[in-house]
Amino acid sequence: MAESTDCVTGPEPLAATDLDLVRLAQAGDVEAFGELVHRNRRAVFRAALACVGSAAEADDVAQEAFVTAYRKLHTFRGEAQFRTWLLSITWRKAIDRRKSVTRWLRLTVSPPRDDAREDTFDHMERIPSTNRSQEDAVVDDELQRNVTRLIGTLPRKLRDALLLAGTGEHTYEQISKMLGAPLGTVKWRVSEARRVLKKKLAALGYAYE
Amino acid sequence: MNNDKSPFGSPGVSPLDRAIDRAVREMMEVDPPAGLSRRVLARINAPAAEGWTFLPRYAAAAAALAMLVLAVIFIPRSPGAPAVVAEPPAAVAAGKTIAATPPAPPSDAVAAPKTARAGAPPRSAPHREPIVMPRISNVFGPRGRQVSAANAQESAKAADAGLADTTSSKALDRPTQPFASAAGPQKPAERVDAEALAAAAAPAGEASRGNVNIELTVVEDGGTGEPVRKTVTMLVADRQNGSIRSRGVPAAGGARAEATDAREDATLNVDATPTIYGNDSVLVLLTIEYLPGPLDARSRSQLHERMRVMVTSGKPIVISQASDPVTSRRTTVELKATVLR
Image: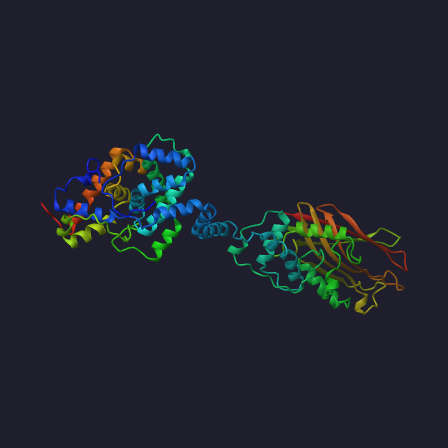
């Protein structure tokens, strides 16, 4: 099966097709599981990226999440969407990676920027998506850099919710399942994150009416 | 992007909102590296290698953490053994006093025998206080010898009298049994008793526990007439020395009137060193020299005694009887020691 690297603008239809693939994979069809990986790779990768902040680590986390999901595939009963179940596994793996000693050592050896918190969202190795709109080009680059930097200084809970909501791959319900928080709490965290960012930007002089 | 369910689907109200939206998109709209599916399937198809790939990643951190925990748990700690430190100086302190060093102020010697005497558990941790090492003149120390200032003087007297070398360890090892003044090296049982007595006695340097009224009576019985009693009384403090020197010159006109030799004078010299034990026991070291004067011109008896006697306070006891080898004279010595508090 040729692996396409084209970006998909929105979440792919999951319902029956994914379930069929799951049944086949549970029966031992590894290729069926490979198709599941292909369909959900972006969502898994971006969820991991929102947590660990590094593309390289996100790739490792994504691999671990898929492997774990394959090994625990027999426990999936189909009561929830496969992607939701998969994203829950991914988020746990990402959290474990974020709390890992090795990562702490790495951050200690390469300390974050002065204005960032200890578990900051370190600089991201961005593999730019080809889906950038023309509108993005008119925004002030300096403002953009400040916003990116300030996002890394947000509290974890606010930052996670904000980034997961901005992946374009996850719904609020999926984010709620991943974070283990009520739906209303997730929405509040996203709103709160935006409010804090605007407050910090205003302190930097970015006050727009 | 699912605009219906995500707030990022709607256009930002302000430039700041748009800037935030753009920043988040740029951070998160990232595609995974190519070949993710291939790598996942490779790991799935190689479960053994896959399991081992986790090991190096966490093994080092886990091993380091485990070693740290073990090091904290099993760091050897110095056992508090003040008993070992406190107990031995008892013998060392005894040796120190026997070496005729000034008896004051052996604070370390005071501490150690106290511990031995009371049998109390070891005191404060040895490492918190500097350990003062006593001066050691005889590393072997006396074998069960009672420690007191009198011993030092006793040794000096014996040396003056031309007895065996009292400064040698052999002399220092003379038995401490009060009733075995002429005995050789103590037997283990006797040594234990002597050690018990030494432990029961107040340590050298401690304040005297009272005075002892020593009453020594020499009864001379010549076989004819009434026995002649001569009494010497002295008040001596606990563990201190008391001495009396008495001398009598014969009256003129008597059988001894022509005697001009000082040796004809009668003398009664007594040295006593009492040691109070408990409430009513007194160990008395006695040295007696008695020259009664000749009853006739043919003989002149002499009495020299030296002994340690354990007596009950206030109870007289005959401590010796000696017969004149020439005449029928018999001399009895009676001792009564009374503790005065």
